[in-house]
Structures are given as structure tokens and as C-alpha cells.
Image: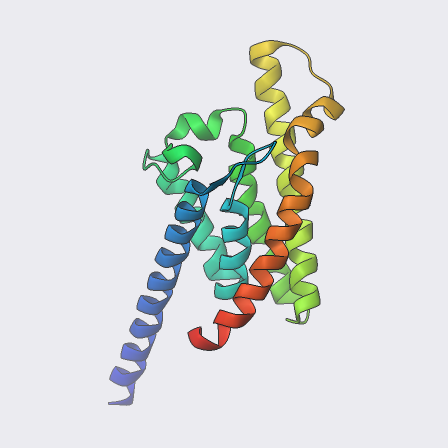
Length: 187
């Protein structure tokens, strides 16, 4: 009898994990569709990645991010502007989307090796964002130079990173506040 109950408990945990991962991927998709019109428009996609990682933890949050990316890759319109398809990922800004996965992996590593306090979580997310920026910028430069010719690193940073640093840090802070409020309800 205890074997059966142990198996059922594992199945429930797996089903709950699948539900949380699905909701996390859906939340990232929904937030990618929300565009804030400013001088340089931005979406709430980064907020959702931060929030999902904070709320679901490194493993489930990273898997949710991967599911989101895979859904977009097969053509489901989950990316910004209701777009999808492998062409978006192989396009000039696709590296930033793939970079979200690195953010998740770094967060997951921090969760395994460091204390799970808010300071370490924020450090992990900031470091993950920096790696996302680095990967996305390298990707952008590669694709851009193939299609348009030479471009300098500072120029690309001016287009793709500098205008987003402050909004992304604000989104990170907002994700921390919202996740802290919702976390007791989830547990």
C-alpha cells in the first residue's frame, strides 16, 4: 500500500510540475505580447522570465522558459508582436530570446550552490540578464553583419542593450515584489 501511495504522490508532483511549467510558459507568452510604448518600445517578456524563475524556482522556471522558446520555434505566435517560427529565433534579435534560457540556467545554478535568499536570487537574475545581453548582442552582430555589413560593438549596444538596462532592472525589481506577494499563495 505504501508503494502505491508513493507512486501516486510522485505522479501528483509531476502533474503539478507540468501545470506550473505550462502556466509559466503561457505567462511569458502573454507578457511578450504586452508592449510598452516609449522612445524605445519594450515588452514585459523579461519581467515574465524573472517572475517565473522567482516563483517556480530554477528548474521549473527554466523548463517553462524552454517550453516558451520551443513553442515559438515551431510557429506558435508566442513572441513579441504575436510572431513565431524558427525564423524569429534565427533573426537578428533571436539571440536575446535564446538568452532567456541562459538566464534560467544561471538562476538554477545559483539556487543549487548558494543560499536561497533574495539577495542571491537578484544577483543570479542580474548575472543571467548580463549573459542574455552578451549572447543576444553577439548573435545580433553576427546576423546583422551577414545581411548588412560591418557594425561596431558600441553601435549594437546602443541599439540593443543600453536603452533596455534601466527598464529591465525595473522589471526585475517588480518581479521580485510581485513574486514575494504571490509565493505564499503558491506554497
